[in-house]
Image 1 (tube, rainbow, N blue to C red):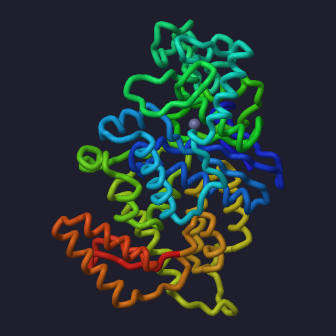
Image 2 (image 1 turned 30 degrees about the horizontal axis):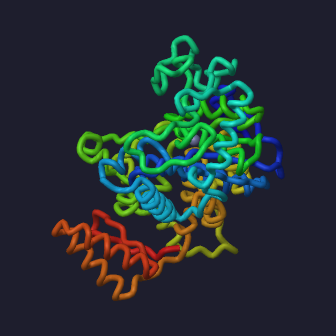
Image 3 (image 1 turned 90 degrees about the vertical axis):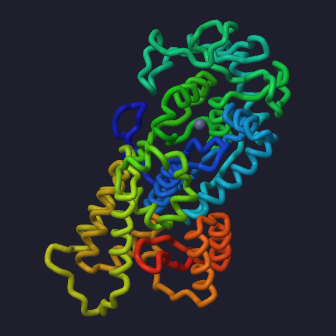
Length: 441
Ligand SMILES: [Zn+2]
């Protein structure tokens, strides 16, 4: 099993199974409902866990929740509410929104506020070894003390733009590990340097070590996190004598394309809205269509293409075959294709290639081949027999349709939740009657 690592600039082989594979993925900062783009790393790493487990690895997937951060203070001030309250609400929404993907949850989801002892301890160690220093109640990492700084992101130390400007810093490149409480910040923790709260980067270093130990296989996150976040995490943890992650996986970003979307709707493409509009299966299939390292274009057109593929798989499972007499067409050899499928995923987790093989199986009407493999991607529901919705569910869906027609989205959302509580999912589709009812998992 090989995965491309940003640090080594090449494919890096995992140790052979049944090795333990620890994966740490940077989760969301909880100050608003998460965007569909934040859903991408969530999906990719849960799929990767499924595949590695199937290959015989012992996997532990950790994805944190950043619930102390500048963005949370800024947003809570705008909304005139307590920052801890905002973070708690948005963190609950994050769990609820990602639950709807139907992929299960990471093995651990630590919150920064629950890891303060470990965070303060790590900073104390770095101060003790000369890799960090206190300045006016803040603590900064001494970038000059760590020779490998810039290796992950390719930043040249003498050309770097300044992070967190402050005249008290020894060096413009130094970044904060601990920040003294400022005016308008309504939460703080005690530390040897006075009241304050941790910087974002040190939170992840402490949580990763706490959950996975000083050395682990994979660190993941979006491409936008390489610098400064991951460069700083790596510097802190290595300076503290930890090996830290061997492989650094950075997923490509989701781009909103199509003029209408990027201009007027771009900022409201929350994961919740996208799941409402397209359903989980279409979104998951959409994510499969691009390699995890590539950008992916989100637009009504690309989502419609994904929906067409979902429908095509579902169509195949509506057909009845007698397996004892079924003959596959020439050119379809399940054993050969199974090896190709494994190779596609073993070689840098190439989901578009794996998807192409599933479509080839579809053309060959090989239901078993597809059924065995859909569960890796949380799509086994496509092979499940469909059920017709009972009359009361249909009635609620009709009412929801009427509410949407009068732009009463609050009522429409309420009815969606009522339908969901009864175990059904309502999806908006362009064909009559404008919605589709699918039995939940
Ligand atoms: Zn992080």
